[in-house]
Image 1 (cartoon, rainbow, N blue to C red):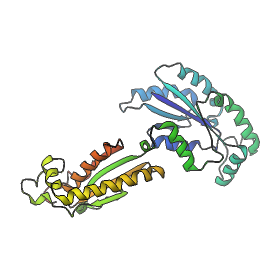
Image 2 (tube, one colour; image 1 turned 135 degrees about the vertical axis):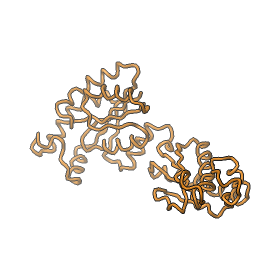
Image 3 (tube, rainbow, N blue to C red; image 1 turned 60 degrees about the horizontal axis):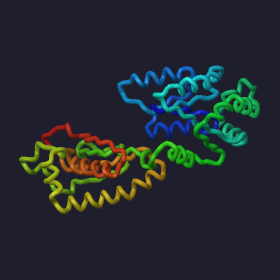
Image 4 (cartoon, helix red, strand yellow; image 1 turned 120 degrees about the horizontal axis):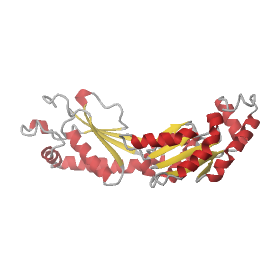
Length: 291
């Protein structure tokens, strides 16, 4: 199991970091009391759903409980079954103050220091200094935009940038409504329809006989090749822009034959390029009397 403790100065960008960690597949928990981290790790181990990557944000918001963070870190590091890393995020005092003024949010220590931001930041630095010394990763965000911070996080925790993008390939039937969740929609109703072949009518694009019928036509092969070329061109651009999910939908009349055929083939194509792919046939169980 991998555990990443995300900590650092309030206002330095930890919330943005946690958003990215969630996008790239970590189970994230924010503002957890340090003494509960070990218990939370144990709960994740007992979960029926496999959880092997955790990101836990721990900072001064824990109040007096934050003093336990170093002891908790030592205890976790002693466990050979867990890979424990610390990511420390910080920014200059001037930038932190500016960010709080722009967002009009209160510093977690605002009441403790009667609104004196400089004193609150100085105290927080003192409390975090020990963690900064043991940090495995360190990012200074004073001059980073949100997208630049995201790129840095991805470069640290992903082997490839494309691992941050989950591609969902789906099929649907136009007769049941256009897919509204999709980023890219391809209408394949222009292709020969297996519904009008009696022996294929009650099959779906999951069956080889239907896929063979659809793809034996040159127009189908050409269309799939052109769509594949377009998607291969677009995906790196989506990754570069920081998109975390891309939904590609294929629609035919009833969502049973042509759309499923293309969704199945596109899934296979994307998997061959080692992308993270999910597959969903929205209307495959709908009324089979019509296509």
